[in-house]
Image (cartoon, rainbow, N blue to C red; front, side, top):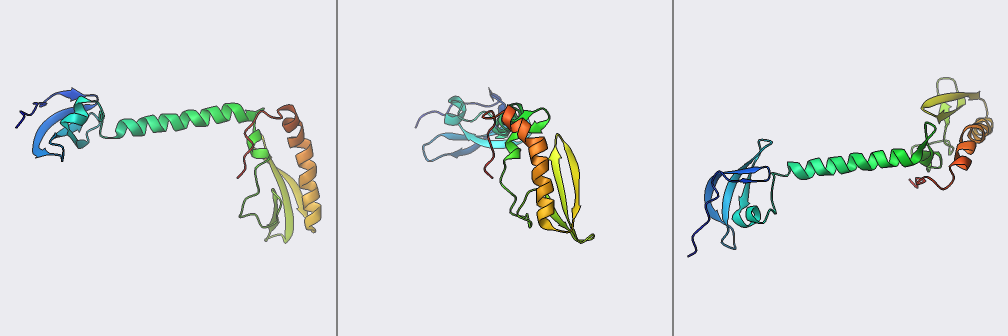
Length: 164
């Protein structure tokens, strides 16, 4: 039988070998108990340590994924936010929770009227309350032409228009 390599107190990335479990995997690789710099413990084989297949308890992968996700968001913001407006959202599909069938037009139960509003450059602009739904829709469409249309035309083709 081959002599097992002693890895006690050796460091592999963020892991430090702290104990021999006395067990081996199906391939005969010794299993070591390691402590990660973050404090978690993980059992890892000699093979995985020596070949750097495992260098942390999993915290490193989580950190990298988080950093990649944050960078993706920054890239989207840089690409889609123009003049304080996310142009990718301007053409977004209507929410499945919308009951009027038109973005920015809702039924105001307390006032028993249709309310029209539009969000632009981080502000919600109130367009009015209307007795008739078509009037509220017309107010919203007029505001879209006033606020959204110039931005969409200016930056046409520069955003990833949202499809959901």
